[in-house]
Length: 411
Image (cartoon, rainbow, N blue to C red):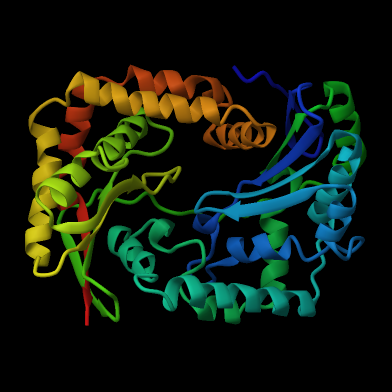
């Protein structure tokens, strides 16, 4: 059970406090409620670009990491479709340095042309290295716009194309910062060896003076129900053919998400999973075969991805996968098999409740989902899923009209 306190500053900043006297460390986790889905479709990749810019220094602090390291700390960040999350860890007796650093870059990030040019170059190289210059790297650039026709999940966090980052101007960046990087669009989690009183004092000192801003989130539409199969064939210099099949699933805030997560584990979690047993081990058609969720807040995807063995056609591979998915629609999963994946989910949740950093990130994400108590309820939700839930959701999502497929063929 994760214990926590919450309070809100006058500028709209939500603060969540979790005290853990068993550690000598303290974590500050700052989650901004902005991800790639909040971007202009013609100016994508900005949330991820800001992940880099936020480490470039502020008006008062030239080198963020240097100041943090001098105090014995470390930091990192990540961007998703839905959020951008920054976190740092410090010895608890130096935690005020963390408040100073985080508040200063929220208040006055350094918007120099030089800093922007440097970070644009870094992001462009990352785009090339991860998405364009490695085998299968562009698969997300292909499968997302195939699966999403309306919703902004149709592009990855890196952006639709390199030109969007190349063409980003200083004015574009300033406008994005002003729209989203403000106290009333963030949640601050302070976790570790720090009292509630000290947390409140430091929040008032460092964050309360930061003014709230007008948040300008562009509206976006819910993805309509897919009513026909979608397929695309890609040819590239890759070692072997690959197939990717994407099925729309319920949103992260719905119980159906947890059912879908367990289904993905039944199908693809390790060498005891159904897909591996059936199509890699017993009747070898793939060298690798996996199933996983995109993990989005809005309606996301359950993906099945496999690399074909030589002399196996795409049609054979696709039909074999569909046959395995259909089994979940026809017969209820055995109780022992379901219990195994439920136990795995419960274990993962409990394991992630150990460190202050993990707890801080979980608290922040639960706040974004609209129910902080999810940090203490998720294990119970997974354990409550029954055999009929699995069968009914499998019937709903494993419909060919709900599937987008990429045939990724080697030249």
